[in-house]
Image 1 (cartoon, helix red, strand yellow):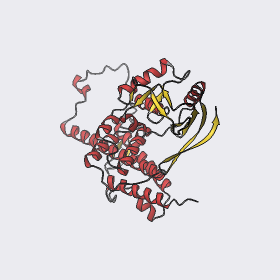
Image 2 (cartoon, rainbow, N blue to C red):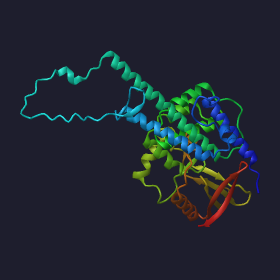
Image 3 (cartoon, helix red, strand yellow):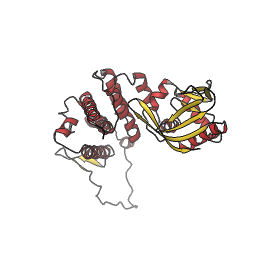
Image 4 (cartoon, rainbow, N blue to C red):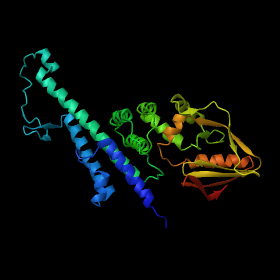
Length: 349
């Protein structure tokens, strides 16, 4: 049985550092800090889910306020807006007097306009704060399941944190929030992992961009995508994706072949890893050339933010292509431990 206490201690240290980075002592926010959860022996997942549900309830109320479905009563409480129950029906024979055309513009007085603007600003500020808190809770849950080897003592740069808060506070969809949570965890663990330029890029991602990146991470063979995969890539589907990745600065398509060197002195032996799967390649010669598109430094950084299942159809197509070249191919699982990789064979092609 392995001793997990060093890993648990690292996770706790990272969680505490993240909380201090965002909230200081955390005494002025209605969320339990990691050290409070531990001291009270609370179930972390259950508490965080309850806190996330409470935040969602507040966000729903803010939406109701914005859309007029709820209002403030004279006690300052948020209540359902009164329904129009006048019940007055006009006789169609009654000739209505002409209305003042300016009345249709609904131009408010200065005082009313100030109150409306103040309410909009308050709703916007609170919504931003709730989004950041929700991402902090997601980050805390991520840490609980992460594999760590070190946590830097260095503090997160104040300018970086302000930029992160501005971008993360605008993230609504769950997958975008998870992305910003991962960015925060990485940066707190090791300040300098994500540059201000990277934050600016991530803040521009659209839903379509995100979908393309997620797909491409499923093909990542440790820094490149092999294009020598007969029968897999379809021009009308995949060509626009490669073009979009290149436009975003994440991929280089017009590059020389990737050369894999043998890991042994006699014959050829190498492993191609794709997420938690891998191809184990054996054959003759000392190297293997593959037509490829290379991920840029930014592309590798962005890919690391998304944990995806590899595209098994792609791996089987690549394995069969290499088999046609005369190599022996095994497909299996790939795991890392202590900085080294471990291949576990599952299937021989």
